[in-house]
View 1 (cartoon, helix red, strand yellow):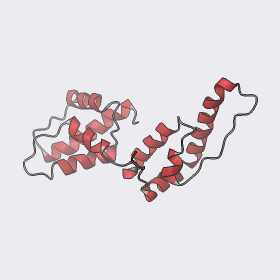
View 2 (cartoon, one colour):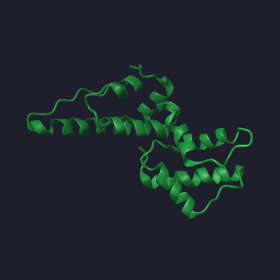
View 3 (cartoon, one colour):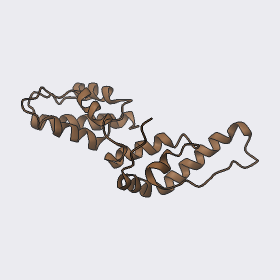
View 4 (cartoon, rainbow, N blue to C red):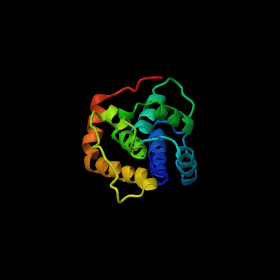
Amino acid sequence: MTHPENMIDIASRVLEEARYLDDRIRLDSGTIGAWARCFTGQKVYPTEALEAVHLYYRRPDPYPIKPGDIIAHCEAQPVWSSAEHVNGFLDQWANFPYATVIQDYSGMAAPDSVAPDTVPRDEHRDYLVSQLRAWISANRADLVEAIIRRRHRAVEQ
């Protein structure tokens, strides 16, 4: 998930781009802040957000774009739609050391980790999360590239 402080930057960039296309758009700190608050907690990434603006204003005679238009577009994009989206996906799934989702999307298997005997049983999961996070950190560029290249589609259940 993109950090809230980055939402101000994304909202600013989106509104600036929209303002070039639509003189009804207000570009002031209040509007930017309100849009950023709408984006907070949502899977909104810079590349997809700007793409949403361009697609929206290709329509004939559109109303002024709203935050929900950006959010809906971003939510509809696959994981591999941008490096930012892939990075958010990796950060999300780093919390699930028993899941195979990262491997499914990237084709890269994290090394099998086993908590050493010195780690108390109730801390095994935390240990495995830290190991997975370290592996993701060391291999992030390769993981991002592999996910974008593979364009894996999860099986619908």
